Length: 439
Image (cartoon, rainbow, N blue to C red):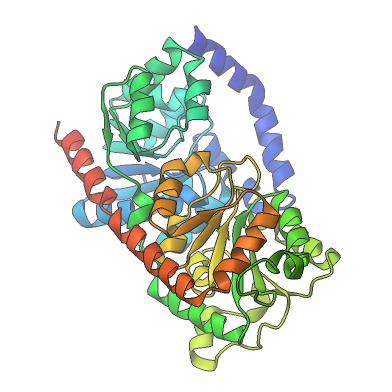
């Protein structure tokens, strides 16, 4: 009965969902491209497989899926990889990572109506499906079970807050998760919460993000960008979300006063500000200017590949460099002496800090990290990360770390060691998939 009610609600909401695509396309035109795919129409893609299907909703999940997809390509040479998304930025990230790989095809997942799901599954007939992290759609999961498509929830996480919300649905939530062939959890805590919902087929495989290797060309070009800042320290604020930039810029304007308490006060560093969502780049640029800071944009510096031949077109002399590009996080981290990871000053759950650590960049993070709780606590325990309570405390901590050269060097080493220590999730995930495919 609940499934019928859910489908009816989706049917009523479908026109609204389509109108929302048009609304969002005002800032991000990609939302009105490939609309047919969201309705289960895939005639522009080859149906012939065999397919292994990975669903990665947006940018973070797509990047996390990279080591898994590379392993699938290597271990299953007779298969094509179907990579599905829900957002244009996720699709763009997938194209950047795999656009030159002819065995990787991309499309949007259909809306979660049973007949659209059936159309999708009948067209591609995947040998197995892997949904990344938290992307659980009831009709999709049930449809895969009915169609005989083994479905794994991989790199799975379930925060305490999400667990409480899910548990309110009682047996309906348990029945939905039991339609998965297996759940491969990031941490023991995630696994325990899945088991508390009544699931038996749960195992801990670790976090795929630890297996993401920062691209060497990105790191190399980031070091070139770092040279453009000259003698100034560079403090990055990455993956910032709406509402956080205002707090950061206000605290940054008070740097001298906030840094005065540091044992070795340092001049105000350059701020490398990287909003999480590209549709907000212009909005954040205007924010920086209104706050009275000078601004340069990463996009004005040209193609980073050219820097290796001719150097930067101009030095970075502004107070703030806006990171208004996609797919260059390794470059941004390599250009930074210290990084703040956004989504954590406000109760948004935080973002992935592993990529910064893998680049050897120490991390500061806010109080709200419930989406990445275990990784954050492990990074703090390893000496790779420090937690702060608010934006003022963030600037005080940044001043203290940047003013302590030996301590900063030690944090860099701890960051790299932390990233290396927790690798191996890809191999464990591939072993679980092999068992499913051979069953």
